[in-house]
Image (cartoon, rainbow, N blue to C red; front, side, top):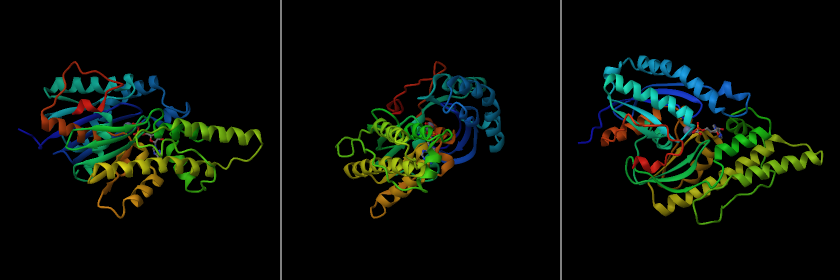
Length: 340
Ligand code: KG4
Ligand code: ZN
């Protein structure tokens, strides 16, 4: 029997946000608490795993308590505890997994392991019902993937990046431009003030495959900046940002459009931190405005890491009766097919 009535408490600690959330009946968000550590990592220009783990340990209990309080619920009301099992930083994942197992064990509740990217995709379901088959463009700090879904809780990766993720490229280019971490939002802002005047590559654009590659683009930006410096030429940061962003968006939109057509999907779901990108949102909307394909992009608060999305994906496992065990571990390289 499938159980669509549920109250799921979820925990997310895969990177630099300590988060807990509660979702009722698969789509009703009752609370969504995120404690960001960005300020602590900023001065290092990226996430320091050791610091991330320590912050998670300090915050996790408070964040869970806050999520229950905001939802006006106690553990007695909770049907299952979902948690990000992977991928992510192993030390960071372990804090969430152990908190979830301890909480579930103490209160006699089942525990559910959720794939982080499945979570990003399911963030969309909190604002819009899914229609299958659908395609999801996942663009985060660690992932760039096109994922086909023919039913709830079933994921087929049809293409992914061979090297850097889109968000990773954003963060590395931002660092070169001496912008704060995380760099994505800063490049996005600058891009809108500049012109795409620098010529940069669009890797694998003409290939039939749905693979991506962003490390060449990142190197091209670095070379452009170095060359200009050597020639004592002024670097127009806004134009570098606009050129880089245009290149990323061209590749993402072209490949996504091709996949949408090939697989005849009803919806395109955009997921992950880079889904917050204004330029990408505009170009995707434009690319599909004359088609029957519905484009769904979560609000900014659900694009970056949060636990509401983990609860939404966990609710599907709950419905199917797919539970984890007390042997669950943090799995840094967990494949998304594990959810199938
Ligand atoms: O999904 P997320 O919060 O964490 C991971 O699971 O990786 O994504 C974080 C990434 C970072 O690389 C950040 O720079 C990028 O998302 N990001 C953006 C924007 N906002 C966040 N990239 C481009 N434009 C944005 N507006
Ligand atoms: Zn993420």
